[in-house]
Image (tube, rainbow, N blue to C red; front, side, top):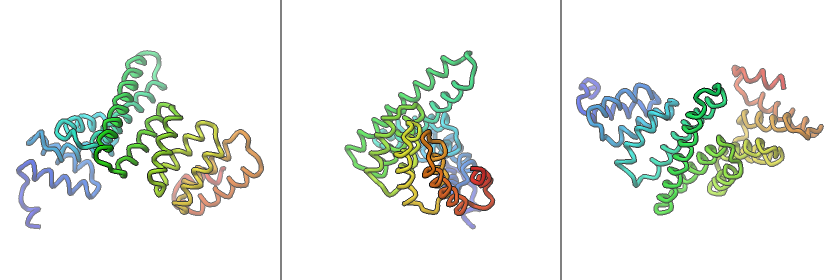
Length: 259
């Protein structure tokens, strides 16, 4: 209480207040304090880093990338900075790609150039991060890199590269369900329903009470071109499980019952 009564003055003061708000998941408030810290001390490394993470989580990748550019200048030896910046570039590229599909012909070339530029920037940062990880091994960071790079390839419909990265992530750590889910989605886009079912089954083995996994596996059987009575029966069993484990207040239950 005594500490709270003392007004913030220095960049470190504002950074520490922001850090506390960040730990409590109040990202917008945390960022306001990080912004003040950076106005007082533009080269404050940790304020730039945590501010970048806030902006990434707030779906503002352009600002996050500016912050991460400053971080990389100060700490070029940290592989995780390149992974975060690559993720920001991937988000910017994804947005440009979505706009490209929605917009009329006017401005399409600029959007295409932006998407291509950010995609290549992300690939470059992932490659730089891998070089640093080879020098200083970090399997947790390598796993995150492989999964995120796999999703980058998914966004650009580079299915073989996406599946290669996700398979490598699973070999590195098969205890996390997310890579199995992402790989299943790749196989489904490649019209390989049995391979997708296998990956969802492995994810369910890790998280047997997660309703979205059963829903996703059912969707493979519902949408497959070679649908047979056995597939419909399995889909019904999965939808029963999705309904069982889903929160009663979730509107998605209407979708499950309809299916």
